[in-house]
Length: 182
Image 1 (cartoon, rainbow, N blue to C red):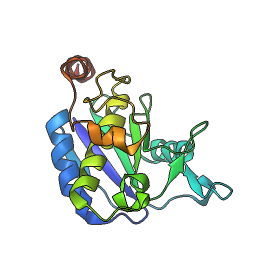
Image 2 (spheres, rainbow, N blue to C red):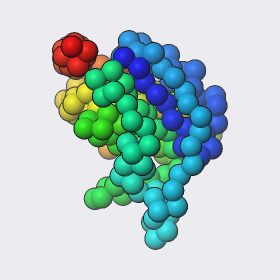
Image 3 (cartoon, rainbow, N blue to C red):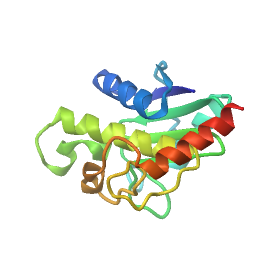
Image 4 (tube, rainbow, N blue to C red):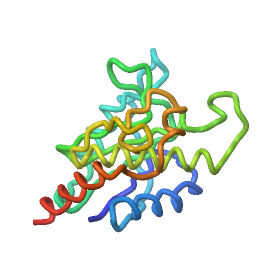
């Protein structure tokens, strides 16, 4: 399994070591950080002052042709984003294209008026990346609030999760990885 991390526009480099470590551990994957790519102006919603996540995800799927049985794409955007009908989202994924996307904006403690906390910020990124990549393997939302596949309605929900999967989700992932490799 290989995961391509795609920085979209400007993403500060300090996050990638923790992200690579977390994703390698959960997905037993080779993780490659690619060159930064631009974002299309059409993806920006001027009324909302947010990016429309579906447009970015579609662009990733069009641009990165991958072997969906052996590869995944994770876009990282350092800007706020939404999808209908949600006011904001931390991330989005499409299992059909094996592409996912995480927004860093609302994962930063500073977004909520708190002081910078790099460790907390990086922990949130890893959890949300695991969550969105999990969806690319058709993992649904989990009822275990500690599992990374539990739905985060707030950053506090993300903080409560672990940077890993519960036993039931690990089993589902393992089963799906075996089927996809065949």
